[in-house]
Image (cartoon, rainbow, N blue to C red; front, side, top):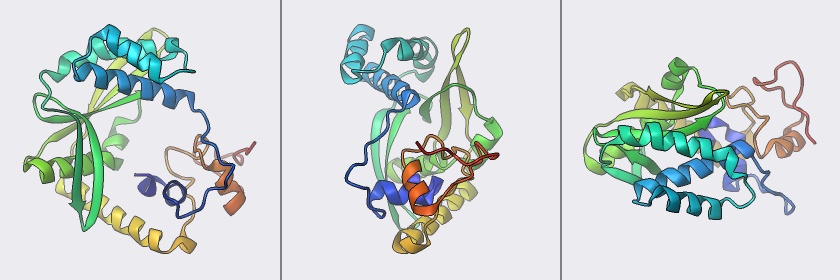
Length: 240
């Protein structure tokens, strides 16, 4: 997925660009909350009680304040879990072909109605139209489920968003057409071509995800020079 979001990120994360010996993955507080919430949801769907699921998450996220993720796990139990019914699949690993490319993916959960549901935690809800139009994940997962089971599914994003009043749940359906699957297949072709020609790889600072929270920002700054990004267009991103 990194290749499709930003070629340089894909190159750093897969070893096409060599990481320096002193590279350390930076701590990302928001990512830690998302990881804890996903772990809790997986535990619960695998049959753990709420208390056991919480204890397991606490053991796996030492160093992260539980108060940062407890509101999200409570919201998941309250709003997401009842909407899933009896899931058809939980943490389903898939390996499939898209346009000759081997893709490996893991689905969070496929609900009782055969909708693929993917859990997200955020500080604000994204633009729903853009999410549907630009999604890379939804076409991949729908194509993968079809290749694995022979069935066409639907896809939805379960957003748990933090507000002052608490964490709220919004489910965003993402329509997937054959045109969407072809769009992502062409992007995979492009990424594969870049992987074979590392000298042509450059960062994509205009990605909507921005460079400012990327683990490889300082490496790109050193390799490519100052980056002007969409999430901070008025000035270069500071590299500390």
